[in-house]
Amino acid sequence: MGKRRIIFLIAAIGILLYAGASLALGIYLLRINNDDNGYKDGCYDNCECDPTNGGKIFVPNVSRAGVYWWRAIRDDNLENSLHLLEFSARNGITDVFISMSGLEEVIGVTAGIVTDGRFAEARMNRHIRPMQEFVRSATEHGIKVYALFGSGGGILFPGASRNTFNRQMFGLKVYNNISNPEEQITGIQFNIEPHQMNWQQLPDETIAARNMRRNYLLQSKADFVFEITDLYKDEFRIDWCMPFWWDGGTYYRFVTDRHGESTMLYRILIQEAAKANGRVLVMSFRDTADRMLNVSRHVVRYAVQHNVPVFLMATINEPTGPQTRFREAGKIEMYYQLNKVRHEVYNSTTDTEVFREFLEKDLLGVAIHHILTWYPLQYERIPPV
Image (tube, rainbow, N blue to C red; front, side):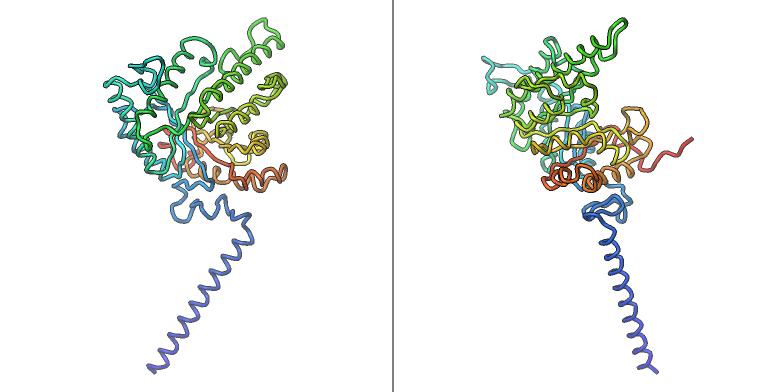
């Protein structure tokens, strides 16, 4: 009886092992048959959308993932900033676009020579040393840090805003000069939105007059881009942010490039980014991957021609319109949609060859706007009232 029991037990174990192996093989084959380029339910093979963490960790399936950081590093927020940096690193961030303060107050400048510039000791303690520690920690996490310059358009024209910006750029060069390599800023990123300046039609103004005024604002942005490229392309990588709606309306076509040819502003940004080893970030503020791609198709098509990487950006709080943000949907849904962007690009039924080339050249990135709204965002969708 003992031998029979042993034989029966061995046979039962064999049957269980065979069934388990068959089940695993079936699941694998089912995944192979259902996947598109490794895609399943919004995920790729290198994306932990569900089984291990419930989707609560963002594991980007693209090689570049950025986050906007609209708060300058200071001595009184350094500890919290380092905590948010750890959070960003855990969630696959590769690029931080951060506001910087204190740069404009450089002293000891002789004939404009950067190597003579320095910051006062109080400024060093308040702004510079905390920033150096932050960048050093980011470097340890494999994250690149970019100085972020945001403006509604004031720096495009002579005046106080432009003067402050010029001092900040000089201060940024001084900062890098006095910092160790692991503490240095990699590049600069501009989020300048001239449509925030006198954009609406004025009382008693004709549509033609309004369009001419808008054209002046956008051409001023184009001229600024040319100037920045010429001044800084040999010192910094230069990235540009753009709203997707800049290609709408016939008046945009009156923007002229360096050769006096009519073009669209987003094309100028891509052309100039290519000269400065830069990238472009699209404010693709929509709440699903397909919508994010659909409003950005024109940018992707043109960027491929110039080998310029494109970040598609998700936002959490702004704007407030329908189908534009992830505040109500939560973190898990946002991670899911961001990782589904690659799938949408790969399986696009229009511009298929161009979009496949876009992926083959590894030009796709994603970004989140911004850290102070991303971190506290709830994981699950907020139930309707």
